[in-house]
Length: 293
Image (cartoon, one colour):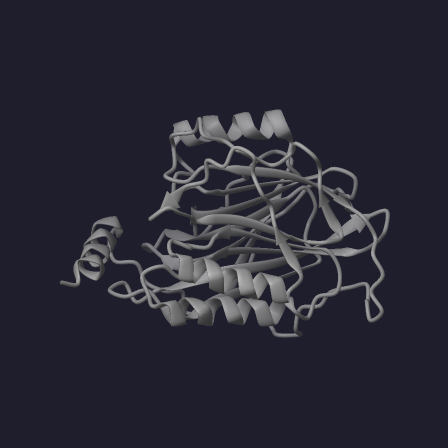
């Protein structure tokens, strides 16, 4: 009896709000950042969180504000973020952001992933998955942004993904492979974070193989309270070897209730390594992007 696929379909139906539609194109929307020129290399802090469409929820705002005040992350990667299609609100007083939608919930609201930073990105790219979720027929999205580091002048690539969920392992591998091909072109520091929907050992193995080929290492947590499904963690942060994890900085916060995922925090320190073919600057393909101001 194929109970699991039936159960998954029912859960998806109950989770949908209205009739979401995919955007017509891969687009990014921007809210300006303060005038800072570069990200620091000695203590670069990242917060990652699937916020379960709770941006307007007062409880989420309280929990998020507490994390921002206590840890001052310069980088924030959020998944399942709902935003109005016009008059984009600020996230914090210190962060600008890039938003990449994968769902049009209605005429006024989009949903997708957001990468926020204390500086403006030097480049940005939205990647909608070729494969789509069943029933809703909507893609998932990955957002790539690049930022200048100081004092080295290196370009940090940050990839923020919400991976495809209710599909076969092969379809999951298709989205991961497309992102891997983009990231493989970058020479320099790199962070990959998000909700990967790795709810099975097979998905974890596919993700581990892709990140290993990219030379990325997973952030490990001494008290690992990450959200799990069938015993497997769904959320991950990976980093290139030239970004050392600051000892004691990797945390999962289990005292938040506003989302069904737990926020994750980590600090990095850039340590220069030799790249024979390294080039300072953007590595994103020169593809015209439809950017909504």
